[in-house]
Length: 117
Image 1 (cartoon, rainbow, N blue to C red):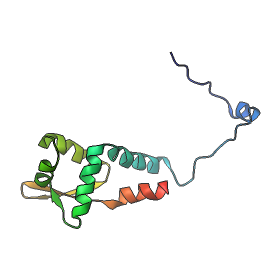
Image 2: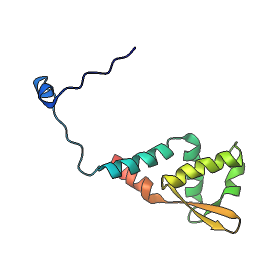
Image 3: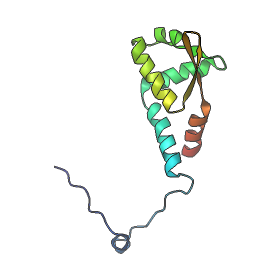
C-alpha cells in the first residue's frame, strides 16, 4: 500500500528549504486544458500516424475512405480516432456529399510545440 506524501504548508516548506514556485503566467487553466487535449490526442501511435498522413497530403483534404485501407482497423475504429483528433482541434473536417474529408489544423499543434520549446 502506498501512502501519499504529507501536504506541507508554505511555512513548513520554507522551513525545509523548499522554494515556492509560481506557475508560468502564460499557462492559464484554459491554455493548460487545450494543450493537454492536443497532447492526449497525439499520444496514441495510430493517431500520430493519421495526422502524419493527413499533413503530408496538405493542402489537399483526405477522405476517410482513403485512410481506412492504410490502417489495420475497421472503419468505426478509425472514425473514433478521427473524432478524438477533431475534438482536440488537431484536425478539421468538411462534408462533401456522403463523404467526410479531413485536413490538419496546425494551430493546436503549433501552440503545443511553441510552449514546449
